[in-house]
Image 1 (cartoon, rainbow, N blue to C red):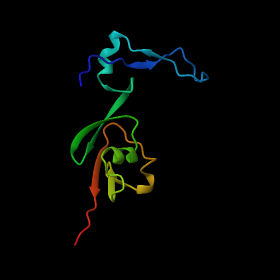
Image 2 (image 1 turned 120 degrees about the vertical axis):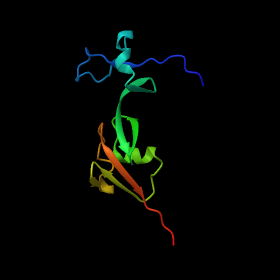
Image 3 (image 1 turned 90 degrees about the vertical axis):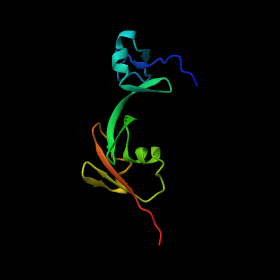
Image 4 (image 1 turned 135 degrees about the vertical axis):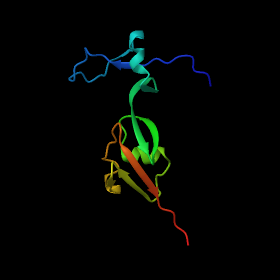
Length: 114
């Protein structure tokens, strides 16, 4: 696949919160320096977060919950323990717990056998 160009959009500051329709405008050429820290998904730019997983630096589009991360790492349905910044995250909180830039995660997958 050859990608010749990407158009990113940003919220129009003239739009008020009361306005039910989100108005987006193309990012100007002068704004491209800040765009490189973002990822293009379906024509829109999203901020990136840098996290460390088991000692390996990774980047993902934000916002990102622990459950979304588990899904992206194809670990859904497996017995997983997740530690975020030295604290265990209970499985029941995976969907609620939002990851932040700079988080350090340790993920352990239980393997059965005899």
